[in-house]
Length: 165
Picture 1 (cartoon, helix red, strand yellow):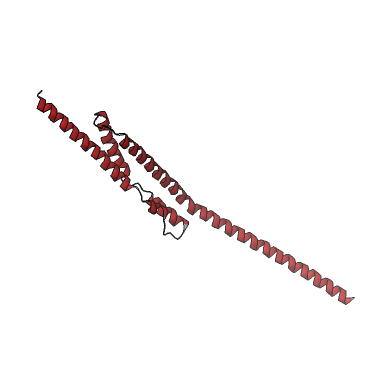
Picture 2 (cartoon, rainbow, N blue to C red):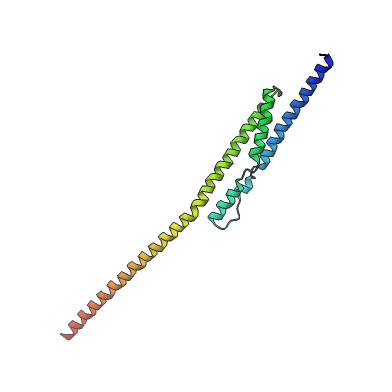
């Protein structure tokens, strides 16, 4: 092989390594941009708890972040195996950070989804309990009124008996 060809190969390999790193960085950047904004997760315009939960559930959508992360990992793995990166510790650390963040967003979304599906049933159970409790209070109140009415009648009869004597 001629000296010029070997030099060309190294130059091409260097370009390919740079392009691979750019591909990894670009995919990571796209993945980060797909994640929800902090304010979208924090702020709400809902009027009730279920509205808040549904809004939060929608906000906790990672979009295509996982697909972009997969692309980044693919290019990173190829570059690592080809020993194309001189120093890829920063890429590896960012990939790990992104994986953790996506996992956190997904886990939070699942928890909020579970809670959002539980709240309507809980509200119904509480409303039913309130209705039953109010009915019991009304029943007890009616019984007390009936007993008070009997006592009043007995007292009136006793008063009448005393006046006849």
